[in-house]
Length: 154
Image (cartoon, rainbow, N blue to C red; front, side):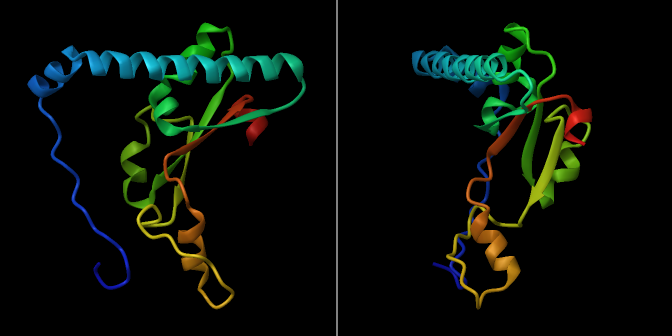
């Protein structure tokens, strides 16, 4: 392991269109998509049920960003169930935050500590605030979902 305990890996190359088309033909991919859609619908139904049970409350759901990003997944299912006022808040790395602005990635984003996903440490009173921040940013892909209008969140 390199000094400092961090393991640095380069991202795999982006697949080309032919590779993507080939993967989409495989039965495993179809089962993955169906499972993902089932989870998305279950998340959305739970949010809608909570909204009906507590109509004056702000309902917050914590979902993986893959179920929220770009309005796919749970947001799409919420719209299908008649809920049009949901907003998403997704954490993004400081290094890529500006590239996601204006791309319909989420209604709002917040940045998290740099390298938080690769460096996990227990915090003690002797550590710096930066180390504590890195240790607390446990799942970079977690998205917060609030069923309230953006005006109510401000």
